[in-house]
Image (cartoon, rainbow, N blue to C red; front, side, top):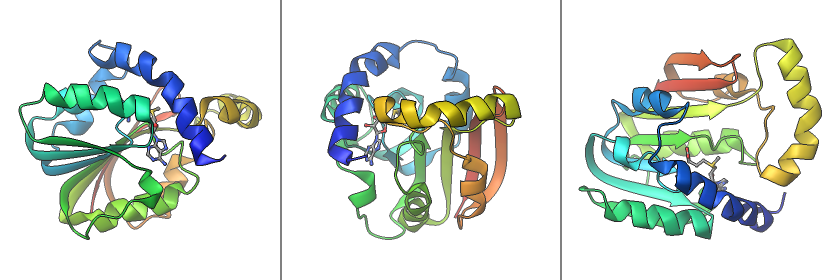
Length: 200
Ligand SMILES: C[S@@+](CC[C@H](N)C(=O)[O-])C[C@H]1O[C@@H](n2cnc3c(N)ncnc32)[C@H](O)[C@@H]1O
């Protein structure tokens, strides 16, 4: 999908994400678990409205990126409430370039489903993370239950054009092909959601 069109789709989701931002939802405990060890200079890709910002505990600086103008507007408001330096960039993650080894922790939550080249973005995360640093992911994808997986595969061509993300990506396989050192994966909800703890 054209990325301009995709970012406009996400613009229309921004209000819903913003409403959920300070509420406890089904994924709140997963986000807390994932981000408990995030520390130092943190890069968060495709940060949406900044749902994760208040969860970080041990931050030197936070650099957040998203390509949806509406998401970024809300995230910049959320950033003002933080006690640590927090910059929100309006950028396409696939076109970004930071210097190598810049961040102690690189985070992505619920965004690998949207990139045309998720494997490329994982390698960029590896590149931008310091050696020994952490890459933390909370992502959704195809279920480990065949009956659900088949349904996801049938619906994906129709849904992805409308919601801007794929529901049938095999995140575990994509990770296997990456150069990340995965230390732990926790899968939830019929194997559709994954918490991934990795190092570089
Ligand atoms: C499902 S939302 C998740 C938002 C947030 N990470 C969270 O966990 O609540 C996906 C986000 O990815 C952003 N996104 C998707 N593709 C992107 C890209 N290529 N560059 C930058 N942002 C992107 C969208 O604008 C949207 O804010």
